[in-house]
Length: 292
Ligand SMILES: [Zn+2]
Image (cartoon, rainbow, N blue to C red; front, side, top):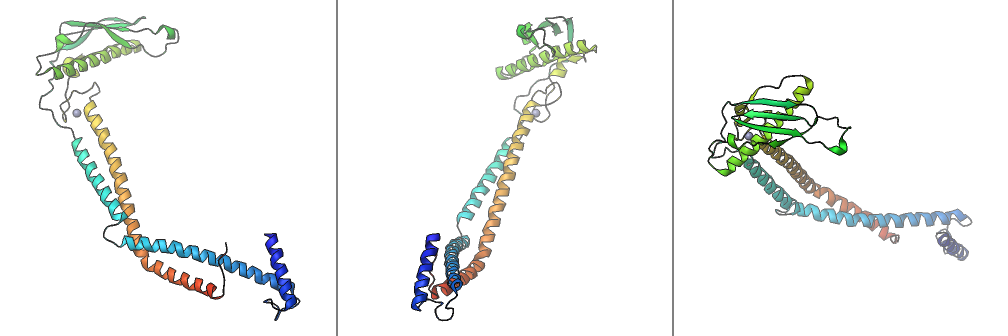
């Protein structure tokens, strides 16, 4: 900007010489007075630019405040969307309550599950006997890991199956469900037998009835720790929906708050516009042009 200052100074000197500059009347011979004038003028131009910008911003705010006072606007539209989302989430939540199925899952009789053979040495092997059948589980050795294996071996079923234990069932779907449940429960039991042997403790006695207790809420079979996998999954879904509900309600509260704030601001914005207009007029009347 030094070229501008030089140019303005030159102009001032010319005016001073001609006796026409603003300082010519009262401040002849004081060069800094002319500079002060230029500074004030520049400050006023910048001020006018700021005021015009503020005026535009206030016009935008005014428009929003007016919109907020109408019956249907961007806030009421968003609140309506959020209300619908909340209703949907509440419906979804009801849908994930456990419902007892029409066909009951049967509990098997108190048939004891016995250990008929146990080998701890690699490959570890456990044979379980229940209801006249034998099922054998054997450790699967991962040869790549041999020598580094620290965790207890994982047993896999190698002989026998649970089918002879299944009672007459109303349909194949439930039969398959019970088949999988028993396979899983007996495999866990075989692994526990091995764990107890390694620790030198005795394995708790179990019967097929213990393995097929049903959930009071949904009627499904419980796992060996007495938990219902089906109800646990529903509970997890409900928690997810509850988190969504909290988020939706919070956003709705924020939008309502913003709407109220916009409405309350109208008289304030109007007063600010009035004041800004007056300030702009003052500078315009002095012939000030806004800074670039
Ligand atoms: Zn359940």
